[in-house]
Image (cartoon, rainbow, N blue to C red; front, side, top):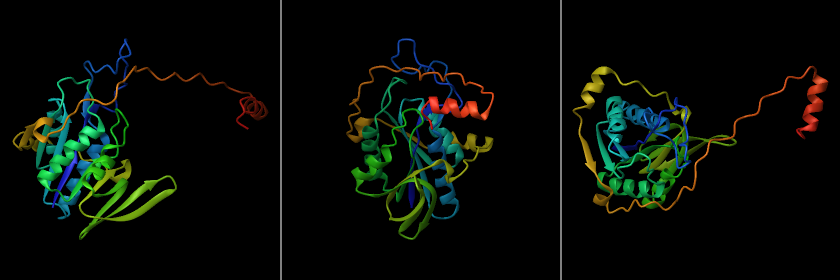
Length: 252
């Protein structure tokens, strides 16, 4: 069985994001970029399924600018077998919208015929949390979102999901779409020998036109602003004073 893992190039989670002076977007000049952390967890889970003998081949896919090659090479160094890069934009500031991504992924799924698509539940740059669900709808496949545990049992996947009330365990038929949450696993570091081997692994380059998909944006971002800074706290001298302050604030 094949497993398809979409990965996205985003600003590294350790970097403090800064907004451009003209409020037209986020400043990406000389900013460290890396694989979306949720996607990294998805890659790790695919590798573990292969190590357990449940999966035969892992295909990493990235949709965006040419620089996404670096993200795919990271996935290959971790243990993916081959990669597909869909160059959908020349501008690093252009974010391909979830519906367009889902349509491209559907075309790739139709071509590759994987048994499971493992994706991060969301990207940390736009927090859309929509691509996996849209892909499920386009394909007519079952879906299991926010996965904290994944087990393949014959023609089904048993997935433990993180929900507001705690944990929910469901069984879905294969093929399926699974979006992963933070507590699913701890991604491995790519070793130097594997990084060198990754350079020789196949990486195909495509365009949205190859799959008949129009990636023209449907949304227009009017402005981007920094969040309001938090106000300084206040030190109180006693519990009584604390209670009085809370009453004044309407907290109690």
